[in-house]
Length: 371
Image 1 (cartoon, rainbow, N blue to C red):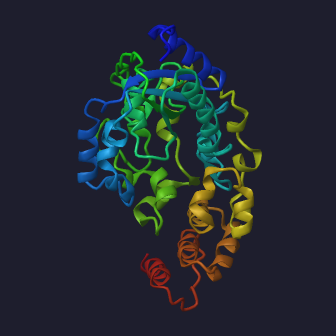
Image 2: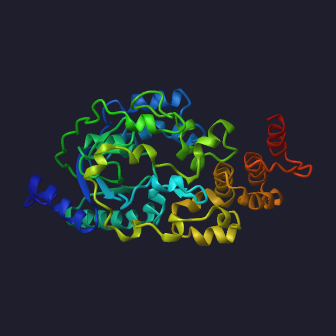
Image 3: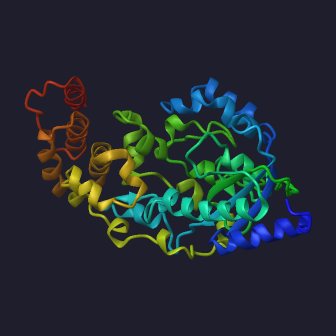
């Protein structure tokens, strides 16, 4: 670091540049393990609450401690970008003929948008201060929420997500690891108090206790990460959520201080805000990739997405959608065919899957016959 740059001046200069790049929150942390993060991760994994996310288990040691990930790192610049919605994200849950997509996925993929900002900021830091840098935005074993808590950006609420006094629950997180020695910020205190709105609103009771999440029961996990058939016990509770769930985020009282996102690329696309379930069932692979070309939704693929849409159709109570589900009994994907059977059974329009050879499709039909 140039001798003419004081520690306070360094922090101020990096923050100024970060805000110029479009980051809304900037804090600094030591490149060490956040308090109790490793212990909590170990418990989470030991109890199997990560479900099928095996990558969390494979990288547990590096995830728990930034020094394991990059021993040369001395400081972490923790960055946040506001993506707060301008409207109530739960209002669409009442429109059962439409699909509800999580706020974060209604605009462009935040990984790509933020990565450009990160690389520009990191490049400036490397050039200006002769430091080594590495950038991360939800693509490596980095515990971004505990790091943001330790850096004073917010605290992990009872729903385990970060809560900010300035931005509520609506911050995308990213980080720059660097060899620079930067004075850290103080950790934020917990301001949840006796509130438990996020816990009580969860449709699938995914929180065994405050500050604990069982991902296997979480609608975001089930509709995004889970690759197979969603367990029957959760399907009705999913409602018309076809990608993710915002319930626990949206009810947080701290959101009253949040301002709508200024980043244009995070503003919702009209065709995704009010997507009709019947039209979504007609997406083939090409149509799916075209509709979600710049969206994080594209990563789950067409079959899993249509699986989710069929669950929403089954929960819609709208028998006019039965024809769409029946058409998908002939879909090439057994995952889709099985959920078409389930949707038809829910709508009271149960139709034989025509001796489908897939055992999961037959199992769905047998379940309908028993009810």
